[in-house]
Every structure is written in C-alpha cells, then in structure tokens.
Image (cartoon, rainbow, N blue to C red; front, side, top):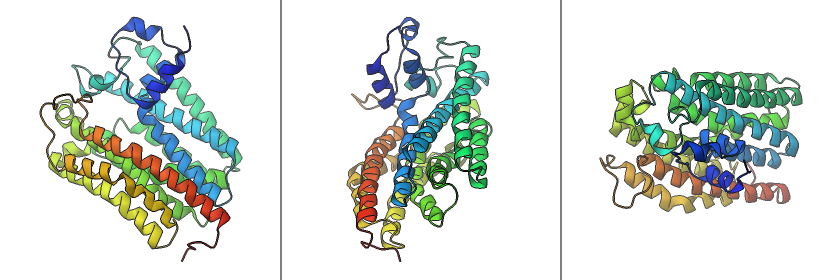
Amino acid sequence: MKINFSMWKTASWTLVKMDDKGEWDQLDIISKWLIATRSAVTTVTIFSCIIAGLLAWRDGYFAFLPWLIVTLGLFIAHGANNLLNDYTDFMRGVDQDNYFRTQYGVHPLVQGFWTKRQQLTWFAVSGILAVLSGIYALIYTGFSPYVIGLFAFGALVLLLYTWPLKYLGLGELAIFLIWGPIMITGVYIVLAGGWTENAWYVALAGVPFGLSVASINIGKHIDKLDADKQKGVGTMPVIVGEKAARYINMAALVLIYVVIAYLIFGPRYFTPVMLIVFLAGNRLLLALRMLSKPRPAEPPEDYTFWPTWFSAYNFYHNRLFAGLFILGLVVDTLLHIFLSGFWTAV
C-alpha cells in the first residue's frame, strides 16, 4: 500500500465516486479517511478556522500552535460527524435502495467496503483525536467557561445532528450556527484565552460564512427532497416545501452580502477592502437564478454533477466567496495592524 498524495489532493477538493472494492483496498489510510468523510466538503471547517485565526491575529491574540491543534481537531471532528451520519442513516435503512447519498460519493458501508465494526472504529479513533484537541483547548484557556460551553455544545450537535435534529428540520440551522458564529467565535476565544469585548463582532463576522455553508446544506436537502420524504427524513425543505426552501436559500445567499456591507459601513468593523467579496457576484447571481426555478427532473446534457443541483451551484459560489472572504480578511488584518488609524470603528 503506497501513500497516494494525488488522491489526498483529489479527495480534498472533489467528492470521489468509486465502485471497485479492490481499488478501495489499495488506498492508504489517509485517502480512505478523506474520501469516507467527504473532505471536499469538510474543508469548510478549515476555512472557518482560518477566518477565526485572522480575526484573532488582527486583535493581537494569534498563536500558531494552538490554532493548528484546534483546527485539525475540528476538521477531524467534522469528519467523525460524517462517519457517524453515514452509520446512523445506514442502520436506519435510509441509505439503501440507491438513496441520494450513495449516488455522489463513496459510502463504505452501503458498498461493502467496510463492515459496521470498521465504520465505528474509524469514527471512534476520529472522535478520540477530536476530543484530545478539545481537551488541549480547555487546558490552554485555563478551562474557560465559554470554551467549556462551546465544547459541550459541539459534542452534543455531533451526536444529535443526524438524529433527531435533521429529522426535525433543525439540521440546516445547526449547520449555520456551527460553521459560522459558533466555530469562528469559539476558535477566536480559544486563541484569546477567553471572552473579549470584540467577541460579539467576531460572532457577527462569522455569520456570512456560516450562511454560505448552510446554503450548500439547504441546497442538498432540496435536491434530495423526494428521497427524504420517502425515507421519513424531516429536513427543512421536506417540512416547508421545495418552493419555500428555495426562497429561504436565496435569502440566505443575499444576507451574506448584507451583513458584510453592514460590518463595513455600520460599526466599521471591516474596512472597505472586504468589498472584494462582491467579485463573487456572478456566482451569486447564477445560484440565485437556479434557485428561482424548480429542480429539473433530469440533468441537462453534459452536466456531470448530478444528482446534486442546487447544492452544486451553492458549493460553486461558496468556493469563490470563501476564497475572497479570506483574502479580504488578510488585507483587512494587515491594514488594522499597520494602519491602525485607517477606517476606525465608530
């Protein structure tokens, strides 16, 4: 078994589909983990942590080693969540019969690549590594009550997201909160050693990215609405209907840019350099245009991302938006550090 660095890169950027168990067995352990946890999507956790790290650097709290340990821990925790998600849905019979999940990426349990015991083992090892990172964060902050609260909340969502939250129409809200204000604020206060006067602004600064991640999740749940109805999975689109869910998704996308504009021109927390995110406007308009119409019954000719549709366009928007958001934050941070009198807060 050779280390396949090329597969690491591929699995970190795109969802891998594989049908040959022999090919799967030849993969190295990291490649299997990246594919099974759908790391092309879980990289949003790294983006959230980068955003938090930049905001902490701007306020003089950044330390590389704690940031790295917490970031890796959260990334692994996200992967553990996906492993548990797949196991829970498999045990409940949700992922059987060519369900949506099995059409766009490897599902080791459904495809017979892993046994149930192996799936649980991978989850347990991932969970232990994530918990160790959390323990480090607690020690680093002197057991800050804010970090304890966030640690407990994150563990609770990890265990309860697949069931019952996703069945009660609360999964999309949980995604927004976790990968937006909670994770970004959480990493920030770990680096700061506790709550600071800027923490509420950090939470608000996490809203745009959280919305962009939630938009992917809402899009995915609209894409598989019919399948979820048949399986009894009560996602938000199942509860409110396809049309309402599409408009909620559109509102979330627009709100991303409204919040950023407010943070620039309201409290002046961001400098005008953050307007760079509007360069993702073409992808925003494309996503909005697609969401304005019902999902087609069949994919257009040469469309290669089926059965994902709305989620694919939202993911396409998220990738550019996230890159521009982080690029803008880098410059914004440098301006705050080296030109402290520029665009001062009101």
